[in-house]
Image (cartoon, rainbow, N blue to C red; front, top):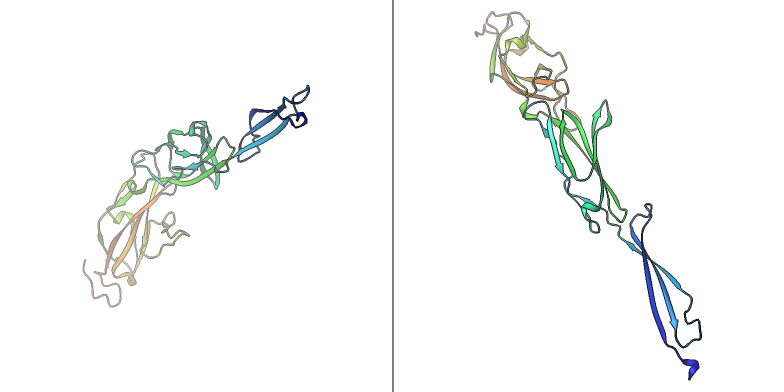
Length: 273
């Protein structure tokens, strides 16, 4: 029967648009317009259009493979030449299509100040002097997922800055309240930066303080002698430190043998050097 005639035709067109920047996790939007026609109907054959919105979503942001920086050691000269090609992965956007911004901050008087910034994955040949730094990387994929990595690290001289000398020295008392001075110890200093300023300091082993990370703190500036009294007769262990003007430090331990050849101390038994 003619009233039950249905000869349908169905078609659609798509319009693809990128999502707004504020729509995190939405990659793009498809505006799909449906057209339905019934050729059994009298003119017009087309039924009203129907518009459908399809949102393609991905909420997984970029992942950083090598944005964590370990402490760096200057082996020669006064700077560490820092270069890195960042590795960043994402399950919806190739790295060349991501928005990647990085910066290197240096800590100065307790505040972070940007010394260099750039875009892309390549960080090339930055001269970093001794100090505290952080690498900040921001990566945004085409689905507007944004992740950030912050890595703090130190640049120092490590073992290339050192003080060395004899394993032990002997000190003969000239009074009951004598002093051991730096000039009494034949030490040598090694520092890779010719322009660096530093102090050599003395301290009895076991008298130092520990910081909150469990590291031994160097002696106070100006500690260039030790009091030698009668209670120091015999073997003592002392620390000889090098501390430069930006806080890098290193030390070694040597034995101090105190003798009393003049018999100045009670019960010293006239120890001979």
